[in-house]
Length: 383
Image (cartoon, rainbow, N blue to C red; front, top):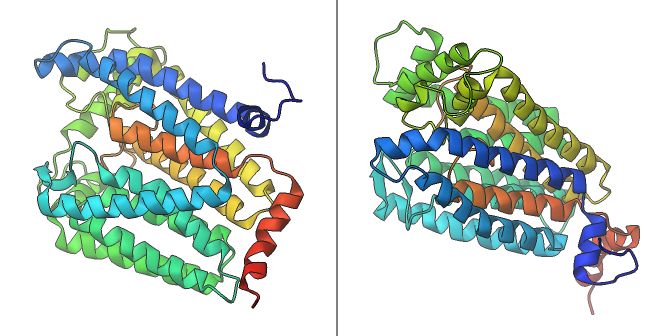
């Protein structure tokens, strides 16, 4: 145990973080390892790899992820902003590099140097958007305008990849921050109209988006180029598993499910461990989201409140999208389930985002918050 009388950085960190949130995140990591052991061997054998290839790699990914999480959670709000800016700029540069030089996988250019830059862009984008919205009331910086310009500058490269799943996720989080920042309703309706226009344009001009939407609306539709095999098989897994599941390692549908260890690991959970286990996982996600939003709402610092809420929304919306796709409640998006799905870029970027969240929501003396609010005004006064 760390004594309260200690004044070291580690002691200060321990007594100012929310340990319930960290315990819940740790629970998800443990669930993820167990479920990766259940889902990935079938995929590894199908690809001619050692049985526990993906399990071993996931453990390897967790080492730098834990280091990133801990380092990010130690940062002050000012350093969170600076780190987020660096992460965002580097990620956007790599996204453009992937568009030009990346290898095409499943019709999209999302990977370069073995990483998916859009995963790391997301936490950086959320923190920068929160920073811009929090500065919206200051005369010296048109924060709302910066926030408005930040969204198209971010999603246009994602659309060019194309990656409509990440585009939708980033846009939804941005709209959530827009709402939490308390901007006028006319802007909310305006942004909503632009979003609907974008969806209609994608439906009209992007064949695979149109086909997926039509197939989702009418499962019997045969037109288009959408491949719904994975979604259909995932839904069958829930019926096959029932309430209690077939038992660990006894699933059969995972053997024909190409992304059983990544995007559709929730379906494997349903088949082998049952709907009760799925509900337990959902409960952990709900606890993290509700507790995170509650803590963020109590924060007196505008930037910390918006950044904490935005990062929690990013985490929660991504989780909801993945589970909804597995349940055939929305068209396929190709999105991982946080800390459950296999993936290096995904788990490390999520660790970075959650580390930022813990950092901005740490307990701080009121005097420190007031100082941060008046410090820019002091710096702006003429000598």
